[in-house]
Image (tube, rainbow, N blue to C red):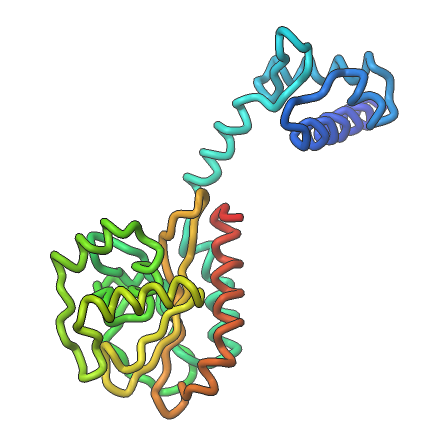
Length: 254
């Protein structure tokens, strides 16, 4: 019976937290009791305990209860503990299984991208990419997907330092044209590499966002031109954007 009462108290405490967090100005004991249909003394005891541990705080002037800063502390620790590769891996495997193509996960670092995960797929495809290797941003789909969501001053600094060196005949080497490309990428929600980095290889990529909306990574699907036709790329756009949103959600982006 004692264990059952404890479980009920925990359940009520969680219900109270849910109710209070939905009200920006907080709620009083009477209002909470009415919503939960339990007596005010029970609500007060639970609130007092939550206040004691920092999960609630009471306004001295209005006596209304609001969420405490303990939740901010916990959410910060949760976000710090999130492992990008671990959170993304199930979605990458799912995409690999669906398409049989090469899947990359990259992060941004000092004006370049770094491959932190690569799934080979089942189709035969040789690429220069390798986990731990760096790649330029201007001629890769993953690089453009990230650049499109970085602050303008950061983008201009990268272009100033790295330039737009030609990797193939398809590489965009004009700065104005490249900035227009980034604007389109941001508008569309995905980026393309149409043999701009390697001949015979086409890629589609989407950005990954963390809590607060900061772009932190990108996911791409790569294949030979014979398989990555315009028609197939169009079919992949929605699925890639869905994958990007799912991984971003796992990182705390809403």
